[in-house]
Length: 146
Image 1: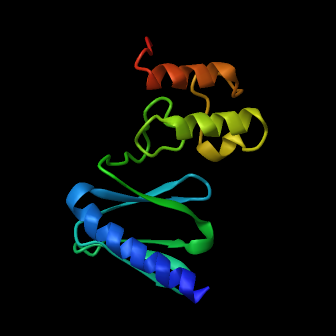
Image 2: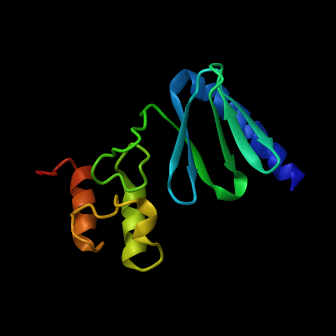
């Protein structure tokens, strides 16, 4: 287990150094698809007592339990606390195949739409179905006319 954590630390340190030149934010996404965002300037990531702790040179800190951490991703898109783009089901700042996969899993009852705080209902209504998937496909293909 320690070997895996040390490998993860090395990879994150490398990514963090590279990300400071290319990306402005780190998103730490929890198992409920909530995004905890922090700027990358002076970013230091440590693992303490089962938590991932990200701190910036401006002393901003984000802490999330490793058991609750779904993924970490670098982005140039600043997260708005209460807004998201239509079709951005995972709220990572981009509408892409990941959003399509989430909807497919919801349609196949392998995921729950409630985890995505209303973002899964892309076409409106109270059920996730093929219409929601079609909207995302049209957004990705830049043919959304709404």
